[in-house]
Image (cartoon, rainbow, N blue to C red; front, side):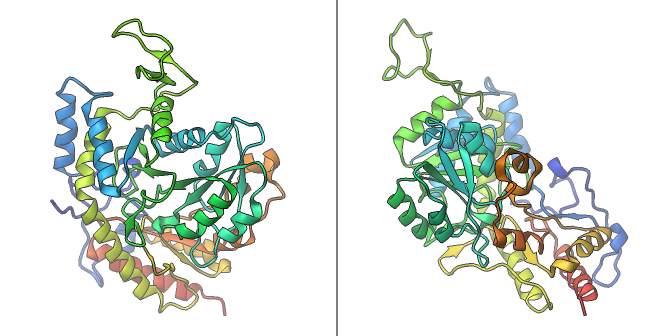
Length: 416
C-alpha cells in the first residue's frame, strides 16, 4: 500500500478538505503550533482508489451496476455475514433496518437505544414511525447498559439499536439474553466498528442486522454510504425492496407476470441506492482495511500509554473479549476544564471534537416529549469528553505533537 504522509496528494481532504497541513520546520518535536492543523479524522485516498472510480466512469454503469453486488459480497466475506445490502448512507441503512424489523407497524412501537451516539441511531425509529427510548450507558465502556435496557423494556418494545461506541463492540451475549427474553429485534449500529472483533468474531456476525458506515472519517469510505449485513434471508429481501422504492422483479413476490419489462411496487420504499462509482471506491478501500486498522490500533496504544500518566485524564476501557476498531479515541478530562482545553487545543492546531451531546438533549427532542429524560451517566460522560485526532495517515510527528500538546495543556489547566 502506498503510504501517504498525510500532507501530499495521496490524502484528499473530502469532508474536511478545508483543513490543510504545511511542511513543518524542525523545532523541538518538529512542530510549530501556528502551523499545525490536525483534524480528529480524515480519509485516506490513494491512486488505486482513484483508478477504481475512473474505471467505472469509463464503463457502461455508473449508478446501479455490477460493482454494487461485488462490494456487498466482499464486505459480507470480510465480516462473516450471509447477506449485505448497500445504502446511500448509514442513516438510510438504519431506517431500512428498523422497517425490516417492522418498527412502525403499530403506532406505539418503541426502539431502545443509547443516548451517547449520533442522532441517526435514534432518528431511525422516528423515520419508521416508532418512538426512541433511551437507556443509560455503562460508565466504563460508554456503551449502553444492558441492565438499564431491560428496565426500559415495555410491552411496546419492538427493537434494540445497540451502538458500538467509538469502535468498541458491545458485550453482545448480555444483550442477546435481554433481546430473546423480550422478543426484541437486535439492530447493531456498528458505524464506528467495521473491523472490530467480539470473542474472536468480526462485528457483523452476531446481531439480527448490523449497520456499517462509509463516511469519510470512518474506516473505509465510499464518500457517503452504508450497508446492512444480516444472516436472515427475510430481512435481506425486505432491505432490498426498501432501498429501491419498494419495487421488486422477483416473481416469487409479484401478483402477476406480464413480460421481461414488468415490475411491481409491493410496499412504500425509498431511493436509497449506492452507486457503482461509490462501490468501486469501497471495494478498493476494503483491501486496505487491515492496514488502516493496524495503524489506528498503534495510535490508540500510544495514546493510552501516554495519557495514563496525565493527572485527571481517563483513557478508554476495553472489556477483555473485544478488539476495538478505534474510530474515535476519547479521553475524559475534568469537567471544569473541558471547554478551556477544547479551545486551547484548537488554538494549538489539535482539532479535537466532542462525541456526543446526549441525543435527548438536542432541541428537537426536548421540544418533542423528551425534556424530562435523564441518563445521568451519559450526561456525566458528555461534560468531560474530548475526541483526539486518530486516523491512519497521521505521521509520527503529528502523533507526538498531539500527545505533547494535549498533556501540557491539560496539566496547565488542572484545577488546584
